[in-house]
Image 1 (tube, each protein chain N blue to C red):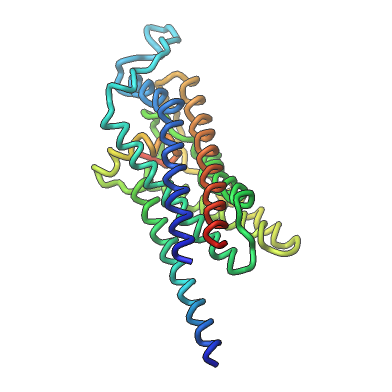
Image 2: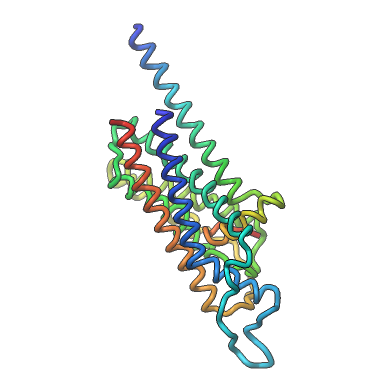
Length: 226
Length: 56
């Protein structure tokens, strides 16, 4: 059991973390560094009544130590996601549920829904420079949303009968009925195109990495069981 | 009786292993995504923004 959980979480987490970091360097980090030009005031979207600004990001190669940190922390986070997912595999396995690569993909997509898509519905991935509600309050809502969504999906997947589906759907809806913490003013200085692209690409990268985590985690799990 | 004891102890070992994995995983997620300690926040800054964690 410990070997199965460890192998599944470690190898799948490492692979997903590296994939997430590479995709972030390609698609997300350039937008992030471009946004910092607006955050620092080096570039402005509104100047002298004129709306518009040049597009273009600083080159990635200027900050290699910073990107090494991004790679390292992605690996840490994705091994963490992998451990929690493998613990879920083990619980399901005890109930007689078979885990393999295909089932693992479904688990990965559920992980994407719970840890990326649902919290982003209330708190979209933030472009640097975004002024938002107090971070501890946002973290609390984020954590609540993730737990409620994961629990709701689990009820829908493993509960028997329509009552469990209704209860699961209620849990999925609860964080959004309560509502994420937001300010009553907008402060954005960066171009809105940049913020939109940043949020959707962050979600897309998460989806790809969760899919890999699930497929690979499930595949390793089934091999270790054999 | 013996068989039952072994099965029961195997089962509780499993639960302990599962709980340990889950707690360790949550600890890593907290460190990578939530900890506001200065150095942790700085090195994790870009990955937090890009993963959708509330950052600062």
